[in-house]
Length: 114
View 1 (tube, one colour):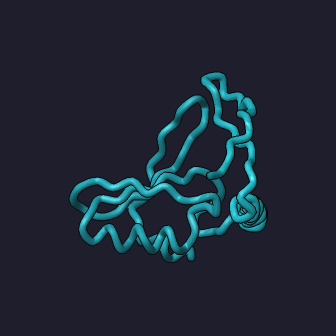
View 2 (cartoon, helix red, strand yellow; view 1 turned 90 degrees about the vertical axis):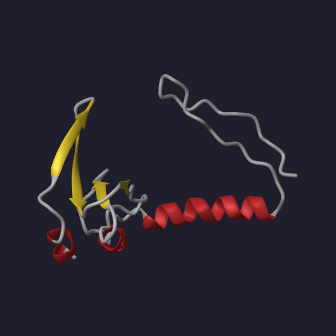
């Protein structure tokens, strides 16, 4: 997978609130930003960027983890999604949360699924 990262230009970075993110860029044309999923900047995401770079200027910020390495949260994410699908398929209601302006996650009431 290191070979895929090497196909991009040398990375540049940006910072926001003391957090620095490295950005991998490639190609020419209209700009496209690709945000990787919870699994990290893995081989599939890097391949997708290389394909798009044939017609676009692609930028992929590394949000967490190491480039080209799938994160170990895959099983945890799968469990969360499985629970949500099970609740949905049983036509039950479930609570969900939305962050407020302070970054807190207050619980919202159960919402019925109709």
